[in-house]
Length: 366
Ligand code: ATP
Image (cartoon, rainbow, N blue to C red):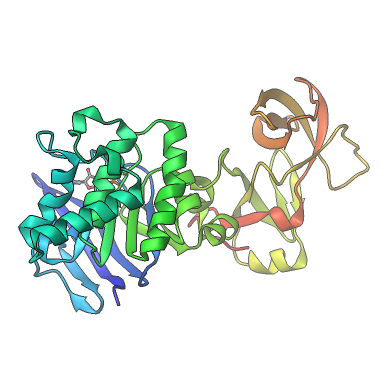
């Protein structure tokens, strides 16, 4: 079993007199064969976490184990892991075949023939057999990335570590490689940690995603759990494009009030926010409904004015202002729907699409 466990991992860097807490008390349990994506903004501690698992950094505190065995005291090459970097890190003077076999010659007892067979097999899996005798300089970015993957695969490690491996590829190739990599990981069934700052990559690739901010784990769950039931305002705003709309409101009994609009809470929502005075209401752009006209007799509608309509192909992003206040809202509507700049409309926030957070802590309440 190659499950990977990070138990209360902390990493503090010393920068002169300053201490930088790059990773703060991180717990992660990754199951055998699972694909977990570490995602978060620049500087949130993703790479440091990966580098500690790889043995390239030493944790200040905590324990890392693979299959129940602590690995901290092992050197990187003894850890039964293979790492794939953003830069590919191929040796320019070696052919693809040599790049792929090099690590095996250094670290295994395999015979030359066995190494040759292993490299051929991995090259077949990655569809790069025809490139085996070329040098990296004669390969496209996507092909170099495959070679870097091939070099990891031939070692049949217990754990793959991938640090933004697709970020040097153009958008189209990145999307293709995402699917391929995911398929490959599923076929090989190797426990994988994949680091990215790209939330789309995280949402589409991970069995589960671990969202980090400021070195702290914000949420660990399936992409759908994190998207539909975000643990806090950070996760809610980080996942989804365009981002969730947020409004600051004050609770007055069973109503939330703000300058722009009031929102009547359902009995369950009222119970959930009980004891919290300042509430952040969140609603995703695709969940808001727009009525072509504002009808003041309809208590569900909030008056709004269309600012700008941004075509995204089969959908349009509609940017609106609410009421008289300078409160902005983005709504995704069908690409065929016609809404004009300056048009007065009514917007509706469906009860089931509303997220409520404590404004002080950012924690989800409902
Ligand atoms: P990015 O997406 O930009 O690569 P990241 O999420 O991978 O960011 P890390 O590289 O893990 O973030 O860095 C986390 C924090 O630790 C940052 O504040 C960074 O400046 C700091 N840090 C990383 N390595 C060192 C180091 N060797 N010395 C001092 N501080 C460091």
